[in-house]
Length: 492
Ligand code: NAD
Image (cartoon, rainbow, N blue to C red; front, side, top):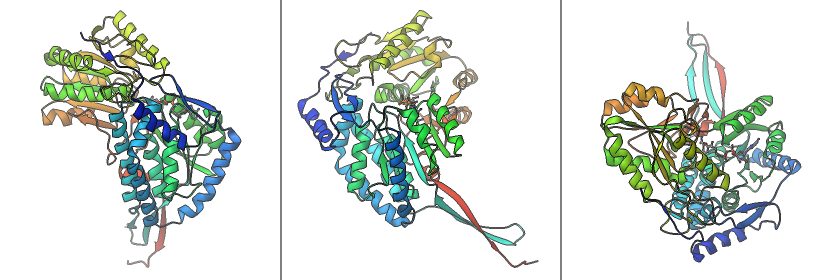
């Protein structure tokens, strides 16, 4: 068993200087909500703590700007989105350093998030000129029906801390492409990337008030006031299922269109006929991306008995080689967790599983030093009844259970109220499709651990959510379908 090594939690000074230069350019106030670097615990900025009046003022302003925006042509909206995309790409390094500074992920992964996050802006710049609509004929020939897509109206977007750029662009870009104004509330743990990206949007030609960022420490007061405002027509939320349920019930008062990207509890199935190398690499990617702090992270790893010993050994070796430390250190492969609560949660989950019979194969130790670090850990023979097998881990613990048959694996994989992502590793094409078809999830990675893509309609079933983000379906979330019925002379 090899424990991960901890590198100095302070990154190279050049990298910090780039991040801090961007923060300075944001012209933030001297007081307000404190934003910390999770790798050092240092305060890096203060952001405005806006009250309900300020949030409602943002709604009024966005609504006003939205009236002109709704009348722009698809091509005008596409051009503005293209210009925003180009500016974001030109500022890749600034964005990546800012993400690492406020969220902690290794710089290489932050660059990956910039690529992934900007892909949505590019995709919806291209999609804006295809707003949809169609023509149908009434069965009795007595009418022609034309369908049109109209912007749904003012959209309130609430985002989490784990992908500060991508979760914002995945909502803002389709809203703008459809012709909607936006009020966006980023997580207070990682607000800076959204603030910066929206400043770049304005530089690129997005009208000043069309996208308003609201930062606040009272998120419930914010949602209670804003979602009850008659100008608001849509809420799109990414975050935990309990908060999603609260927002759904609030949204019902104003009968808002809702998109909910909620919690996950992804099963990952490795069959005896899997390519071992590919299965281990895919599991490492699905587990360690963002330090496991991803809604589609592999949560319950089910391995068939014939391959289990080899798989666990190889996985433990790979995770044991991880280098934990500041995201600015080029050798770091796993950054800090978002806060000390997350570290405590990892310790408690691992300890409880071990007390109930799980066997630790790698990690387990928390590296010493400032920052919220937890070494990637592999637990084998995890009992299905333990807390780690039932809750969303949201950290770098690979919890392995073993199974005998395909039916048994599927029954256990589907025994959850969540249904966001699932993974299948097998070299059999038949089995891959048969298992993917029976997994009760919105998306399935087949022989691969990173299934997200701007071209894919991301979203969950069951209590993992409503609606889809990305692809053409993501645009529809911000459109209302209308039809015109044109009377036709009877042909009878
Ligand atoms: P969270 O639910 O605590 O917070 C998400 C956002 O909601 C934050 O901006 C927070 O300030 C805000 N919020 C909290 N209570 C609110 C309220 N009453 N009214 C309005 N806003 C409120 O989640 P988190 O800890 O930031 O993120 C982790 C969770 O998000 C995990 O469960 C993860 O699975 C989920 N997630 C889902 C997806 C997905 O696409 N399905 C993507 C990323 C994260």
